[in-house]
Length: 245
Image 1 (cartoon, helix red, strand yellow):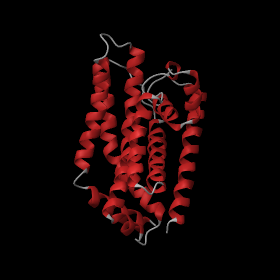
Image 2 (tube, rainbow, N blue to C red):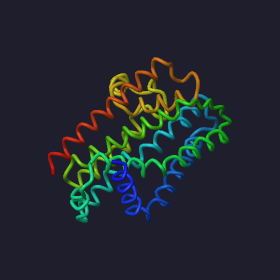
Image 3 (cartoon, helix red, strand yellow):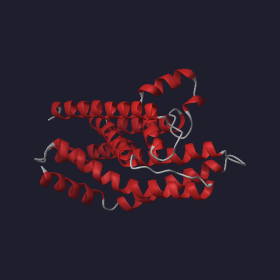
Image 4 (cartoon, rainbow, N blue to C red):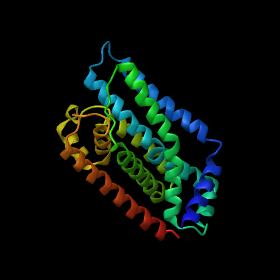
């Protein structure tokens, strides 16, 4: 299993090696740009709002490759004909997913760190990073990757796949309490986000970076929600992959 995993990591790296520097640059610009750009909307941004932005942008960094780019990459592979070749390789499908997860996580981490550094310097924030940041990053990025994997392999049409992943961008930015409190949303959307994973991802990342913005009970419920969505996405992905052999 370990050999298959490293072989697939090497395959994914070689397949994306020309794009990884560009993807890393895009994520870095996205993280730092969002942190700085939000401040341009206000003459003076309140410290509480700055904290939400600073602790929300890392979530977007972690989701961009696994949830947004992965379905588009699979759509491109379907269009160019390399998708079926990849599926014919004598490697467990789980190793393929874990290899993509590894390759997609690596470029996300520098962007995550830089966005926090820029936010602290720009808004004079005081973060309290705890060891819980490690499981929070793993849970967020893994669930995002599993959701992207299920979306990418569950929709046979490349055009529909690209449309769905693009729609997710607007959902993350405008309708999920990632960079702002859930209380700013309409009541019905607050209720919906209690059952969706994206606001919960922000909660577990935020709880590991700042004291007081998330209660222990709220963080615990958020972990359950995120892990449940990850397990559901893994089951859907396994069923889709087995069905289309």
